[in-house]
Length: 294
Image (cartoon, rainbow, N blue to C red; front, side):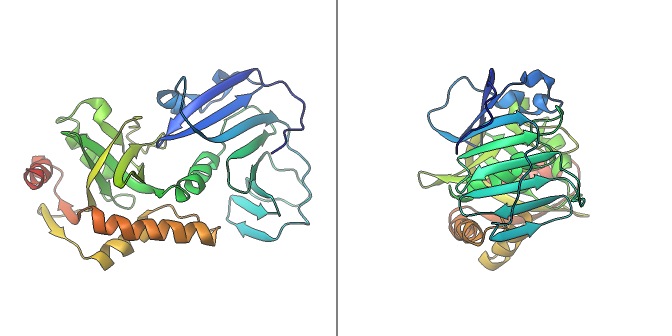
């Protein structure tokens, strides 16, 4: 993608998220952005292969999108597709007013320009997650509503909707593992690399504010809920596929990418054990998992 704005990019940062390299260049010092601290644990000095190159610019372009062939709209953002671009307009849509954030990507999301009306956050709302949802779908992966723990080099994934106990389980495991073995309390990334599944911490934490740039081989997925008595129950392939579809962050704006993620689901359910896990918020929850892993 041609960068035709003509502003010097004096500052740069390289992030490693879910084993994917993200390069960002800006004319603004990154310490000026209010969300910069979210990504500090994910900063690296070098990375073997960059998945996406981003340029940050102050000033929102006046985009005329009459050539758009597809549109996907939510309450807070709008995606329009042209012949060679993906244009993400962020913020509630108001007639006759310029939006304050626009991200313009090439067709495979390997390059992009972030336009911002004011210096506030590098990634307003969920631009970063939108980007990684797209990139991961092309690399046998996806973002997942789950917390993650590394125990004895095994990656444990506790998946569930809001209020199901993701943060509670992480607080119980905090007594059992080092702090950096707690991957995330709300959203992890799962990827199949070299015929094995890995679980990654991401910057997008929940109320417990747990986020670590670590990864491990994925050992088990537990679909969790609060219960009067702690129990584990294996689930069928069809049950697992249904739960994955609910809890994964799917690229619903792109049919081909959705098909790729669904294909990843089919491999995942065959290769990684999955259980329903009802638990009480006490030591029985951790001990039950330990017994399973023995």
